[in-house]
Length: 112
Length: 113
Image (cartoon, rainbow over all chains, first blue to last red; front, top):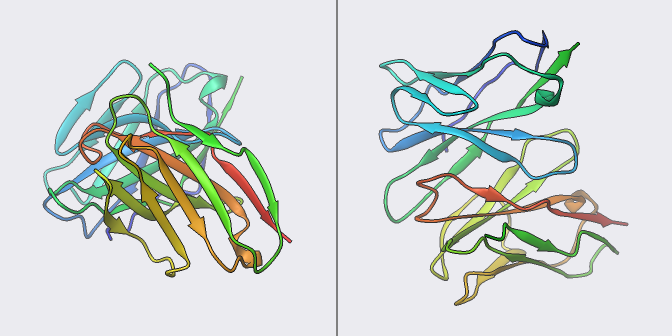
């Protein structure tokens, strides 16, 4: 299973852009990178997923360099409601068998 | 479109007992995976079922077992409960083995005393 490393915590202010980086040095060829958000006493919520280069959706962007050994989740103009734990997930997307590993999570605190 | 529902929401068991947790997958999803999340930690992958077959397993002992039914709902069974099994158990469903992301339920909080 691919191991991931993230900062334990980050602080930001409303309206700022937040970038959270995840390291996954032993990512496999078939692995995708997925980010989830989790609020207390709730299940994680899917944010974004990518394989290489850049992916953007209505809530975030995901930047993946060519070597794919890291990825960066970018949250534009955060608000107080973005205060949560963010997890980086690296998974084997090969057909037949899947292995999913959550990172240690980054606790983002957004201040007014 | 209904999401992932888990039951019960909370449960208290005694050490040595057995427990069954249930999960109804999101409509249209054929893959279910289970996770254990201890307080203050990230979710740990237990196993995954795709079309009623287990197709992935994390580092959990055999007393953690599961089933997926033809309607793609699932059960997690834990035998011989230990105090360290106290955690939030999360179920997640997806279509096509996670190729499009997973939808998680709110979990079952299991306390072993």
